[in-house]
Amino acid sequence: MPLLPGLIGLGLATGMTGCVTRSPAPAKPRLAIILDDAGNENGFYDEIFKLPRPVTLAIIPHTPWAAPLLRRARQKGMDTIGHIPMQSPVTNEIFVVTTNMTASEIYENLTAAIDSLPGIRGINNHMGSLVSTDPASLAPVMAVLKAKRMFIVDSRTTRGSLILKTAQERGIPCLAKDDFLDSEGGADRMRKHLSYLLSVARKRGYAVGIGHVQNLEAILALGDFMREHAKDVEFVGISQLIQAD
Image 1 (cartoon, rainbow, N blue to C red):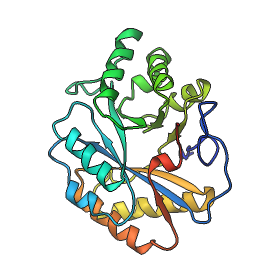
Image 2 (cartoon, rainbow, N blue to C red; image 1 turned 90 degrees about the vertical axis):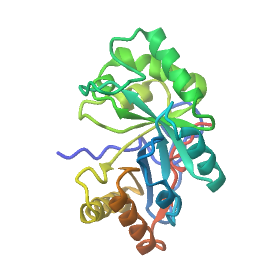
Image 3 (cartoon, rainbow, N blue to C red; image 1 turned 180 degrees about the vertical axis):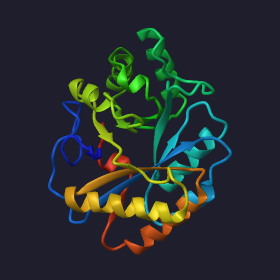
Image 4 (cartoon, rainbow, N blue to C red; image 1 turned 135 degrees about the vertical axis):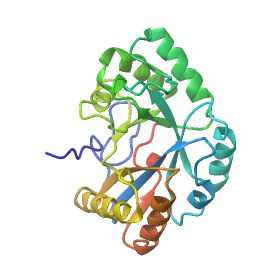
């Protein structure tokens, strides 16, 4: 069975009492598109900032372009979240959170990562197939988010992810990705994934897709899709679906 998890409930979170609370169904289906891996020089940022409808920029902490991207996104009113590197079997990455860290180390590392991205209101995981299935590692992650009143988006890099379950248990506002939009590359595949995402949103009222800042073909295809559906779809930043305030 394909994984189509998303919001636990639908609408805006009104506090820290659960993943989200329900609100009236929107007049149009809502799509929240997150563009991952921002912060390094390989992103097509000019094209992203020219997109005709809102997206969310997921910025890796401690990267060379993080600060100017945050400033530019703020000027444009674009949503930004922290794209937090979490341990996976890939060994050539520097991770903020690993399964062999103590709870105190995770708490300190994640706090520093979030603090390096002023103005963000939530995070999602970069990689993280090991951390997202480890309750002991997720506990201090949720403690940081609780203390900072932030939300989390589960990128669902593995089917066994416990992020949503753990967030729900701790009253952290949370969402989950419905589809990776550009994992197969190319504009045609991107359009097929966007069409699938829209079919989910038409049935459920909303959907969440994840793309990447370094895929120019996919970004341009997203712009075309936004223009094509300008009247029948509401494209929103992720914080409009889930809000920790």
